[in-house]
Length: 170
Image (cartoon, rainbow, N blue to C red; front, side, top):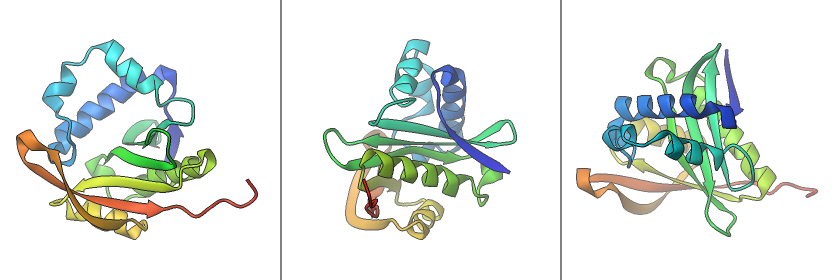
């Protein structure tokens, strides 16, 4: 059974380990690299996590199968807007195809609606057909725009967007 929860201030080591695992497993899925991330000090990881463990501007979610962390996703609000960007989305290879990715995205969608984010955006590497199909199945649509995910590695991505339904009554 898969469960999700928002990161807490106590999750620095978990955040670091799962993010490093994601970067090693799927290097072409992210603009960041394992080599750069491994050099970050504890204070850097802690600062990033603390900015997402509370408040209305960032949210990091973990997915668990029993007590093992099997996924990660975050949503960062674009400054002073009702737009947010999905980042760091990753599910362990042995849990791809499970509900983990849908549940992570679902938790971020619920939170987005609660804090007044109306549009979700993301970029996905254009060679990652499985991820593109997943996001399309979740309601995201390509904007037709391409982005350079990491110019040093010549990674290209496509922008995708999803308009969230308005919440009634407040």
